[in-house]
Image (cartoon, rainbow over all chains, first blue to last red; front, side):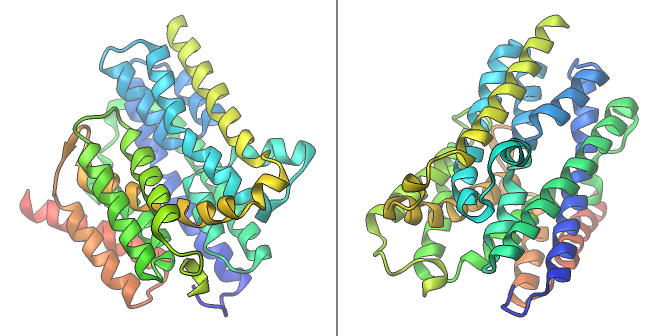
Length: 230
Length: 103
C-alpha cells in the first residue's frame, strides 16, 4: 500500500474486502437457524448488532445450550475491541452528532483495518466507509439467504472461505509489520491468543492476545520505534 | 423464543454502545501521548490475534489444517506485493484445493 495508491484503488480494495467478508454472512444465517434462531432473529442480529465475531459467539453459546443472556454477555465482551477501534478511528473520521450515530454502527474489524493502513486522511475515510457499508449490505443480504436456505447451503469451508478470512486479517496486518518491534508484538499476540484458545470462551483469546501485545508494546518499545516512523 | 429475543436485543444494544463509546472519547484523551502510542499498537495486537485464532483454531481446539496452506500462499503473495483481492482468492483456492485432494 504505497504512497501512489489512488482513491480508485482504495475503493476497489475496500469493495473487495466488503464483498469477500460479507459473503461469509451466508454461513452466519445458516448456522443461526440451525442453532434455533428464527429467520427474523438471525436478520435482526446482523442488522442491529452487525459485528460478525460477536454474532457467532452468541450462536455458539445458544447452540451449546447456554442461556441467551450468557451468550449476549460473551458477544458483548468480544465487542469491546470495537471500542478500541473507535478510539483509533475518532481522530481520523472526526464525526459529530447524527453522523457519529450512523458511523458508529459500521465500526468493525475490517472497516477499521482498511482505514488505519492509509496514511492520507481522506483515503482513510474512503477506506472506512466503503468497506463498512459494503460489508453491511452484503452481510445482511447473505444472512437472509443463509437463514432461509438453512442446512441446504453448502459448507463455506469447501471453497476455502475460512482461510480467506484469516488471509484477509493477515493482509491487513502486513503493512503494519514494518519494524522489528511490530513483528515481535504480532508474534506475541498470536502466541498468547492461540495459547488461550482451549481454556477461554470464544472471543476472549483475541481480546487478551491483543491487550497483552499492546501492554508489552507500551512498556518495552521506545517511543521512537513505532509504525510508519521507522 | 422470547428468551432468545432478549439475548438478541442485549447483543445489539451492548455492541452498538461499545462502538459509539469509542468514537465519543474526548479529544484531550485522544491527544494524550499514551493514547497515541496505544492506538498504534492496537491494530497490530488485535489483527495478529485474529489471524492466529481464525487460521489455527476450531472451536476450543488449536488445529493445523488446510488453512495453513492458504495462509502460506497469502504470505508469499503479500511479500510479492500482490493486491489484496487476488491474494484472498488465491488463499481460498489453495485451501479448497488441498481439501479436495485430501478428501
